[in-house]
Amino acid sequence: GVMPEFVNPKYADASKNSFKSPTRLECMMQDLPWLLPPHAPVSFTSMDSSCSYAPAKNSLLEARAKAAAGTSPASASSADHALWSAHAAVLRLAGASVPPPATATVAGVAGLRVSP
Image (tube, rainbow, N blue to C red):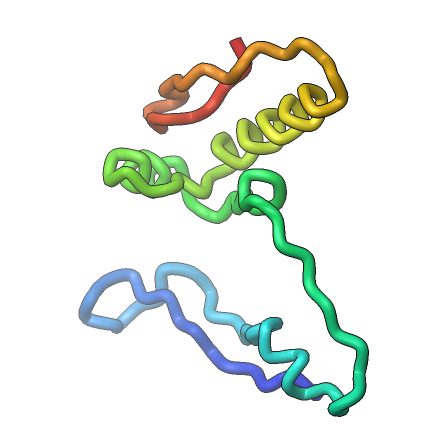
């Protein structure tokens, strides 16, 4: 390693006596350009998160709670629906007639964008 690493534990509760999930080493990829030589060619691509960001990291129970709180569920079902939504958007850009997504509750996870 060139990249600095750190441990970011996820605790089960405020007592910090047990972990919610296994702890792992993490790094901040946005720090990479700072570690390169001064004349290294560095660039980035920026796009709407609906095209590129759909984590599937939360359990169904956690996803329900996050959706109820108005935040992204970040669950398998929300990631799957986000992928299909992104594909539909690309098809629309190519000229296809794809109806807009509807909003539905699936397995108790509210606010998922689904194909009609």
